[in-house]
Length: 169
Ligand SMILES: [Zn+2]
Image 1 (cartoon, rainbow, N blue to C red):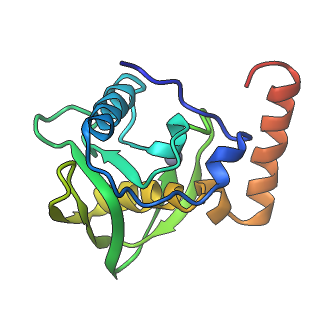
Image 2: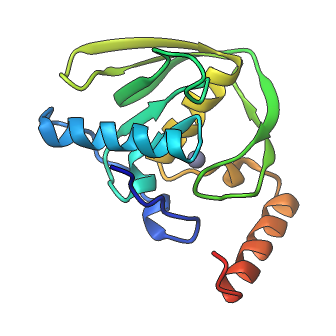
C-alpha cells in the first residue's frame, strides 16, 4: 500500500523518533508499505517520520529498484563509523523539486536490527553512505536543508512559503 509522504512544514518531520521495541506484524507491514512508497516515488530512501510514524525505521535502495535485492530495511539504525567525505547534490521526497549540496561521509558503517529484531550491520560507500546518512538524519528530525548554508537554506524556505501560499505545496 502506498503511503502519503509528508512535506516540509509538517512538524512531524522535525521531531526525534522513538526506538522500535516491538518487532511485530505491524512493523513488517509498515516497512513493506514504506518500500512500496519509496519505489513508486521514485526515491532511494525513506524514513518512517516521512509517512507520519515517529519510529526509528528506514528503507534504502541506492539503485532505486534498478537492481534486485538491493533493498535495505533497518530498525534503530546507528552510524558507528564514518570515513572520508563527499560533497554532492542531494534531494528529499519531503522537499520535492529542491536540491542542495551536502557534505556527507564517503563511507559509513551502520548497525541496527532487521524486522525480526536480529542484529544487522551495513556498510555503505558513496551514494549508499549518503542515503543512509540522510535517512538516519530524518530519525533525529534533521533535514538536508539544515546542512545548507543560511543563504541557500533561506532561498529554499522562501520558495516553499511561496508555494504554500499558492496552494502548490
Ligand atoms: Zn529525506
